[in-house]
Image (tube, rainbow over all chains, first blue to last red; front, top):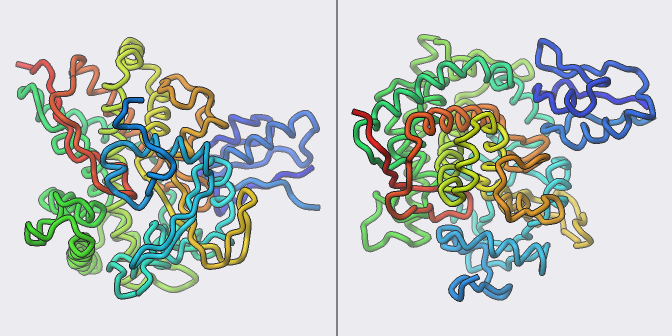
Length: 64
Length: 425
């Protein structure tokens, strides 16, 4: 499964990086980047938490 | 519960500003969460009815769907039946970040949001600490003060006025006008109205209108000045900004200034003063914090949850929809009550306990989603620095008289907070 960050909305709060450090990384421009193309099964719960916690609700699973 | 606080469901009227002034609102919300989680406040003589949301999940649902729940028809509970009953501020519906829907909202927000990211905010810490220390210098020898007037209001005022490039001499006016606009319903700020007419709906409307118009007059002069002489400030940035290839209109910029000054100084003021009151009311938690100041970041989050400086935001449904099984018709207003959701027993274990180490603490004091508070980082930083400096310097600070709360359903304000402490010689 693929997860995407909406760069227009992201304001660099970094909650995603804390919730799922193997999946998200905050760049120098204060925008979160997705580190993996396909989120492994084991990290999907963490990504769900990141989606829920994001203050700007800027993260979503990409619909196939 | 003592006899005088024994509220029942039938007594609760969320249109009643004195419910919030007295501090009884938390008990009202506790009852509503349990007995009527989606309640309808019927229309009154001149205002429409609205739905009250007091459960965390319901406010999440509304906040996550700005395409269904619009901000453009006003973000406060009151929607007048006749347009002539609207205040001047209602003219800003659809024209400010806070009253704007996607897709324009995010474009306008992107013009300024780089100045509000955690990194940008962190760079301001030395400046904010310096302002804080200077404010505390000002009260140090006195041994007592009105903490709201002398300290809590002054830090956020200095920070936002500084960012907007306003001169020191204008800061007291900004404080005064903010009180008129956001405290319009409180007789203390209805100074333009004859004394025997204060406390009425008409007095509130006149006060809000006067404050709004004076604010516009002031910022129109600032704008003219910036057009001739750009500076390193937010107003100059807006003058040079483009949206979809067009410059912002003067009106757009003036509404932006109106929002920045109000949101930038009133809310953090109440986070600081409400935080101090919370710590006074919970001496064991206060002692724990003073013994280990590294707990400050989580203490600030708990203060935000506990105080919820913004009491509500409203939205209007753009289509027929449903919340918690309740049908919400197109055109109906829903009101999200933040102090209520931040003590939702289904989300926060021991929700009625003030715990400065609460983890996790995913409160919604700043909202969430499209309209998440742009200034959240500044609010957190100003609160943390203030309490660090205050408790280091005046560890024995204590309450020295009655806490006076604002008569408002929108802002959980404190107008006066008398304190005393050992003076510095």
